[in-house]
Length: 252
Ligand SMILES: Nc1ncnc2c1ncn2[C@@H]1O[C@H](COP(=O)(O)OP(=O)(O)OP(=O)(O)O)[C@@H](O)[C@H]1O
Ligand SMILES: [Mg+2]
Figure 1: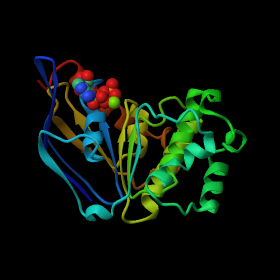
Figure 2: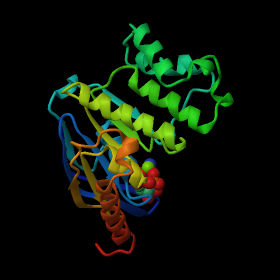
Figure 3: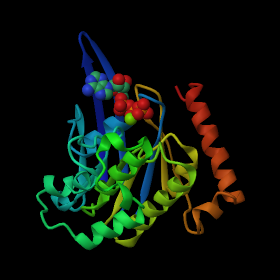
Figure 4: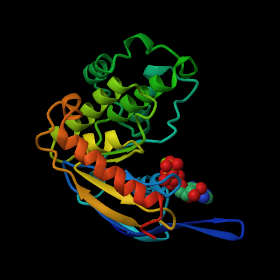
């Protein structure tokens, strides 16, 4: 569904040139969740910014199989809730910006109930905790029902159980319609094992893809149970080892 072809991206900082992404090619299949794991500063957010057309790559292209028909929902790493709009008005912002004026009130109310933010819909962002802000930002991303979900460390401030619930929501959301897919950035191995169909490991800068690992997601069942299984334990250990190798520069 998304075909990323040979992306290179560097930033110029005064006289120096910072090479970030090198020869990044990647296919994101329909109905799948691809997780990006890589060290701090390697260019994960930069890659999502390129996919969402916020940044232009130096070379390379991103193709979408549905062309411009795709709706992208992007939850930024530091999600900015507009401080002068209350929670409900922040949630409906995405719809307003994309000129989809018809807000499905039923869906909106279902989301507010499902994510248990009923009590805070009139709150201003300054009255929210970090985790609450992340929940609100996630609901805002989902409301326009995007085909492509770009999630940049979306649940990093949430408690264990809430995180699992939101991960399960993402899984169901992507699997319930055939034309959806998700790119998920995290530093959290639990999260990567729990929701990925594929994990992409990035190196330190200059950043390249070290490995793509397919995860068999068929018999996961409930995430809470899955996390107690031997299959989960084994995957966790394999991933931790690859990350460790990246950190210790074994791939350079
Ligand atoms: N607009 C910019 N101008 C100059 N340098 C930039 C710019 N945006 C990002 N960078 C640099 O590019 C590199 C990649 O940044 P990016 O935010 O994509 O990393 P990341 O992998 O998302 O890191 P983290 O895991 O900490 O979120 C960093 O070294 C950063 O300093
Ligand atoms: Mg980032």
